[in-house]
Structures are given as C-alpha cells and as structure tokens.
Image (tube, rainbow, N blue to C red; front, side, top):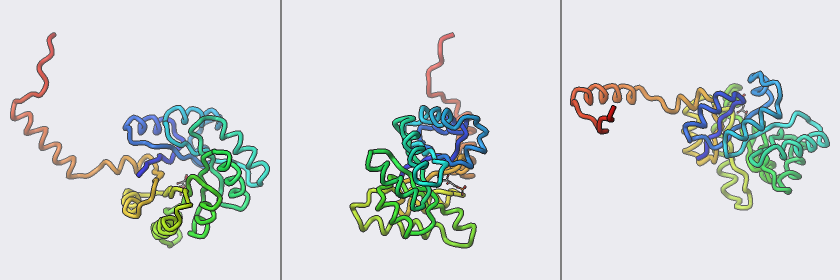
Length: 224
Ligand code: E4P
C-alpha cells in the first residue's frame, strides 16, 4: 500500500520524506493557495526533487484546449509529475491524451463508482475518490472505495490505481488497506497520527526506566 502526503507545504514534505515511508505527494489548488508559495511551477519542481514517486500537479483550466496545454506544460516539469485533472468530460479527454503519450494522470474529484469506471476507461494512472467529503454530506466514503476496488478487480484491462483521497483519520487508512486500495493520500497530521498509540508511549517509558535500572549498555564507551 502506497502513502502519498496530501499537502503543498515544503516543510511537511521534507519532514515526512525523511521517514522513508513516503511514496509520493498530491497537491491541489486549495493546498497550493494555503501554502502561500508565490510560484506554483517552482513549488512543484521543488517537491519533485524531494520525493522519487509521483507528484500530482493540478491544472487550473476547465476547458479542454487550455487544460491540455497546461497538462502538457506540467508534464514536462519533472519525470515524476502526475498531471491532475478534474473528473469532467474535458478532464477525461485530457486524461486520455496524456495517458496515451505516457504521462501519469490523476483524475480527481471522483464521487461515484460510475465516474471511477470512466476514469479507468480514459487510462488514468490514479483515480481519486474523496471519502471525507462524502462522509461530510452523510454518504459513506469508504463504501465507494470498496465498490471501486471490486469493480476494477473484475477487469484486468483496467490499470488505474485507487487513490483514496480526502482522508480524515487513521481509520480511513486502515479501512482502505482492508479493501485493498492501492494508495492513500493523507494529510500530514493524519500521517503523524498513524504512528501514535498510548500503549506504545507507556511501554517505551517503562523500558527506558528499566533499562536504566539494569545499568547495561549496548555500545562500548567511546574513547575521549
Ligand atoms: C486529493 O488529491 C485532494 O487533494 C484531497 O485529498 C482533498 O481533501 P479535502 O477534502 O480534505 O480537501
């Protein structure tokens, strides 16, 4: 299961990349605006240098011609760019064009299994169903992930990976794993929550205390 971090904050990306557990990054226009970065293109190039895996950079246009032009431009910024396009007729047309020329494409704003089928047929590398936003309106985001995983598994010609997006909690990540989703894109605070358990902290504190009591050392003392 791959982990992407869902942020455009350079410091968070650097910090989490240092764990060695990060497989990629997703950004979107809202995250870019929130980061305060003055130059989107420079920001994306910098992020692409921090991780080896896919970095999703989203187009701003909504009409086909301009979206394609932007997608082609973004695709040339780095080898690990995944052009992010919205799940609209124009977005899927751009997806098909870019996929056919070997560019990774992340189809975003997916809210139904029908839309996910279209993304796979358009050759998307990733489809991003937004689970948290579905939960927010009283629907069941994780049920959508389960449905898409089941549908894709029946069609070996579908190469699209299910990228669980709009993740709000560690439970979303665990459920995504149980369902066999390929990727989760996770906000930095939720990635940090994944590490935490009170019994880990309690157990470690006890081990540290008992180790000190034992008077033992593992490494030989260094010469001054
Ligand atoms: C996906 O790539 C999006 O960036 C993201 O997951 C949106 O999540 P939100 O609903 O928390 O804005």
